[in-house]
Amino acid sequence: MKEKTVEKKPLLARFMDGVETVCNKLPPPTMLFVFLFFIVAILGTIFTFLGTSLTNPATGEIVMSKNFFSKEGLLWFLDNMVKNFTGFAPLGLVLTMTIGTGICEEAGMLNSLLRSSMKNVPAALVPYVCVLIGIIGNLASDAASVMVPPLAAMAFMGVGKHPVAGMICGYIGAQVGYAANPVISGTDTLLMGITNDTLASFMGDSAFTVDVTCNWIFKIASTVLCVVVIGILVQKIVEPRFGVYHGELEKMEDLTPSEKKGLRASGISTLVYVACLLVLFFTGVIAAEDGGLIGSPFLKGLIPIIFLLFVIAGVSYGYASGNFKGLVDIHKAIVKQMAAMGTYVGFCFFCGQFQGLFSWTNLGAMSAIAGADFLESIGFTGIPMCIGFIILVTLVDVFFSSGSAKWAIFAPIFVPMFLLLDYHPGFTQIIYRLGDSAGNLFGPTSAYLWMLLSVAQAKYDKNLKIGQIISCNLMVAVILEVFWILLLVAWMLLDLPIGPGINVFMPTAM
Image 1 (tube, rainbow, N blue to C red):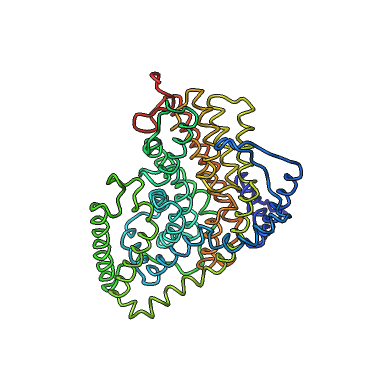
Image 2 (cartoon, one colour):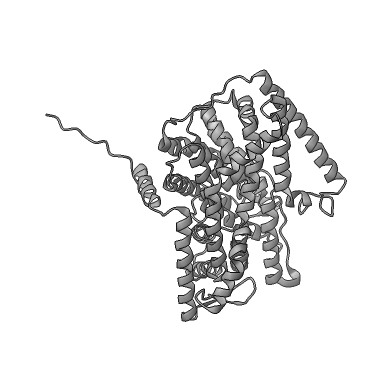
């Protein structure tokens, strides 16, 4: 009798299975951050007794760990426990955007809009479109990680694909948008300010500065790379991991007359809203002092502006289409969406405590400083040094997720170090962003990763586990980072401009 042969899975699939198995053994998110809280507390105590200290290159001050199990630690906890929760930035952002997008979804506007705009888009192109939307959506910074994944899920369902694969696709696009974007965003302004402060400290009165467009050309090239590479990886790796969706699929059917009426009403209200914003901007009310966009109240207030846009468009659609009969229906829409966020709110409480302690004990700053000191001490130069820096940033990002906080620590070390080797500060800034964007995809301390899990469980698959998401995101991050590094190496060898008038190396006249 012929023996049955079991087909051996490819190495990539076996590796992802391993990552998924390990990550699925993680405790529930609330308990995970309880454990991390006490681990940080214990490490802080140990380093305090050992007298471990490092010098913060940004300030020149000595950084020492703090002991949570002391009078100082007890008083800090009593004074900050509630603040750690209410001040946890992702909490307010996620809940605010959930209300806005929830009104649009319950009104039926998102479904109609996607069916109208993507009805003729081939299924094979949907992942690429969702990645591009996520990247451009990063103009709204962290809000894109909240807005784009649910929209991508609906787009995937509309062409018969698994919605969770769509959420992952949209999330990845939104996260890589920090380093790949055809649009100048708030992140450019934030990082530019830190870079210029470092240059002023290092060079004194002779310091030159970088501007907000110093990474623009490389970001545009990265956008093309990310859309192509991520789109392919989503089709070849992510979608097969989830297989066929057994829930109710939203089909791309023709719009009904009431839906068309609703879209017309939401379109008109949106145009009126945008016109009002333009009037406020060009009359200087929400423009910067110089009348520009950078540093303006418009950019600083982008979250409430987007929130109001969703509310106005959603309510207009709901009333015009007949899905909303009165205020009670709007109230029900808000409550229904917020009810699904209970798990996420619980997570935010414990994650806020962990991040608060991680910051208070100085372990976050010390880990970044130690990593930078290590890379500086091993004596890498040229391309290996750049690659080593990218990998270091990615690894640190696993537990220290704030991009601006890391750059505030890394910039005073690496901007002068690279500058002395003739690399332009704008170049140092962009390679930092590559490592940070890749690390954002799979770091388990990212609040938005757990938000994605919470929403996906509530809407599409109650049995979904974090390991399934992390295994996909990690594989995409690793492969994307390889291609990104290859693009960077080619840029360096050809000495192409990374921004208008800015090349990899310093100009010879300097």
